[in-house]
Image (cartoon, rainbow, N blue to C red; front, side, top):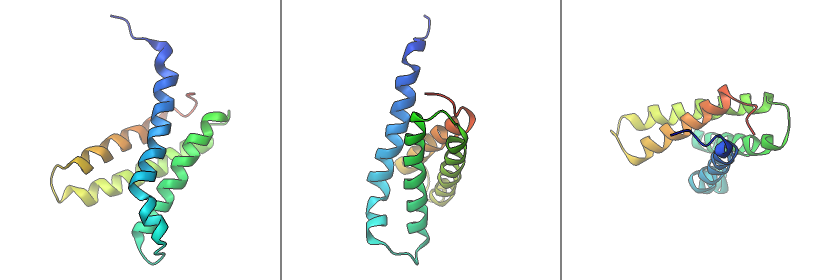
Length: 113
């Protein structure tokens, strides 16, 4: 069976939208509390900003911001994976593995629309 290549843009946009939804559902309360003395606040803020940038760069032609955003999101995801690894295999660990995979996709293939 041949792959349906025409669905690739839809899949890429679903990944962009998924990053935004994940940032909102996972980090919104941390940002809303505005505890600037806590490291989790900065992790949440960076993840939210760079998730929004990956979404926005879907509308522009230059891939530089997508590469930088993918790098930051991948770094944050790996940081969260290291933090969560002590508690064993959980659903949060699997979600951050998927988020890291999406981040590495945009890091390695930034020009995809």
